[in-house]
Length: 99
Image 1 (tube, rainbow, N blue to C red):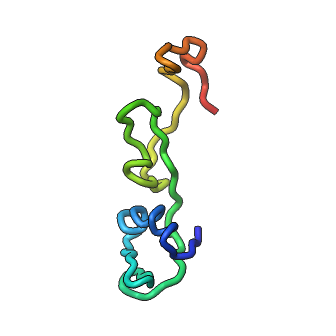
Image 2 (cartoon, rainbow, N blue to C red):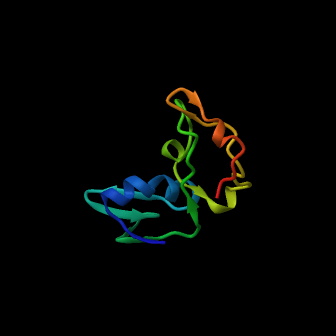
């Protein structure tokens, strides 16, 4: 993916660039620098995924730790084990396949 470096994109992608891309991005006086060289765009070296948690209180997911590189993903969801809506267990979703 290729992005324009601006304040909005930096807020979204800075963590992935700095932690997983072996690059350093920073903004100084309205200009953007990749590995201390002035830049206007950035092209990602890896594919990334947004990992969503179970949406319960205190869940930890990409909203906290950012995007996950594809090579760090070791499994995938197969079925629903627990579903709660308005404090009631949803029996009709128990062990349902996730597509």
